[in-house]
Amino acid sequence: MSTFITPQDLAEWHRRDLAVLWHPCTQMREHPNSLPLIPIRRGRGAWLEGVDGTRYLDAISSWWTNLFGHAEPRIAEAVASQARELEHVIFAGFSHEPGLRLAESLLAVAPRQTGRAPLARVFYADNGSAAIEVALKMSFHSHRNRGDERRTRFVALSNSYHGETLGALSMGDIPLYRRTYAPLLLQPLFAPSPDAFTAEPGESAEACALRRADALADIFAAHPGEISALILEPLVQCAGGMRMHHPAYLQRARAICDAHGAHLIADEIAVGFGRTGTLFACEQAAIAPDFLCLSKGLTGGFMPLSAVLTTEHVYEAFLDDSRERAFLHSHSYSGNPLACAAAVASLAIFDEDDVLVRNRGIAARMTALAAPLANHPNVAEVRQTGMILAIETRAASGGNGTAVEIAGGMGLRAYRHAIARGVLLRPLGDVLYWMPPYCVGEEELRLLADVTATALTEAFT
Ligand SMILES: *Cc1c(COP(=O)(O)O)cnc(C)c1O
Image 1 (cartoon, rainbow, N blue to C red):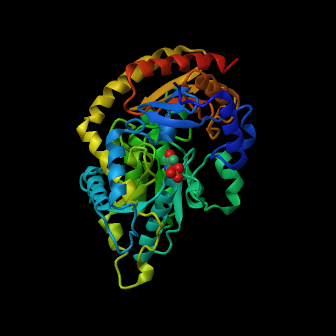
Image 2 (cartoon, rainbow, N blue to C red):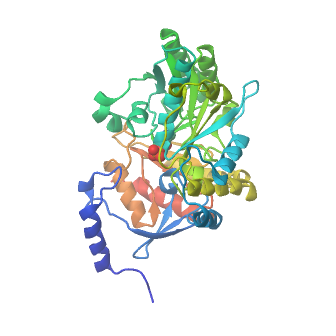
């Protein structure tokens, strides 16, 4: 006997849903005709199961949040047992075990740089955008507390994405997200992205990175004493179309910030927790930032939570007898114990299952399975950093700044093609990508490669 709902009930679900809900990142007009709405009733491993019993391989880790598969039993148990003890408590003036343990665990594994004081403080917020707001405010405020009130500018990279609250959106450069709200936004100085896909013909990724670092240095030189921080996504600009760059850029960026007394904010909200092959992307450049922003995979994909790690030097700038010099930023759910318990359990799995080592094997299989796609007539490039593999297509909408999810055309056709074959792909503009949960197996990777190959043909016809 099946407990799945019937087609009539599914239609009724669609009616109810579209009568009251407003889904994110969606032109609601496209539902239900050109874009199917897919109610999910459970998740297991790399698979999602619809209320009608249809299964979907979650090749994008549910917006890059999931690490070890859906309903991972150890994380589920940690959340359940925490919920029976303490679901939430105000985090101002109060503390709790999961919040403390998570901070200690994060600091123990945070990126380190020889000769630099380590990240030593953890501030919690409840989503990625909020973490960006925290880092921007902390950077500005710490300079100000040290008597430096001129540092009011931020530098961000072209093609970047840092979230969608107004401050975070200000730092982003994806036109479709930014343009509408432009009159409301802060005005960062945009430096050219080190994106290796935009290298000159014959130029290596490293040479491209260093050339763009020179442009970054010029921007700093033109604004002496005005820049509070540089914010960037280390190694992969994910929402910008999984554009990748050489770690040499990060080393130069770190040195430029130091030379100008500015902070470096590393937004590892998407690339953290093993996505790039190392636990954090900064490790591949052997640098440590002044602010490390974490979210998405932080809880293994279970709960909304974000953390901003910073240095004792920044922290000390806020110690004073005056309230105004304190960092008064707060969110009601700051340091939520359920989310912290999920994050503690998730971090432990990296050791328990030797995840980074095992992932090297998975990443190698992704490389091998995607290799034939490079010869496909509709493919311009296949690129990979660790567990992120991207296929740049030759779709006509192309170019920088169009990397918006299933925006229409090729992306929408590829999405629908894959969904009909039980695979969840959400192309970013002209870019198809794989960012699977780390529990993905050989069969699943083969299915993903097959469906991607046929999508590449059919989405162009
Ligand atoms: C997703 C993302 C954010 C925003 O996180 P939200 O939790 O969606 O607000 C910020 N920066 C990067 C790099 C991201 O990928």
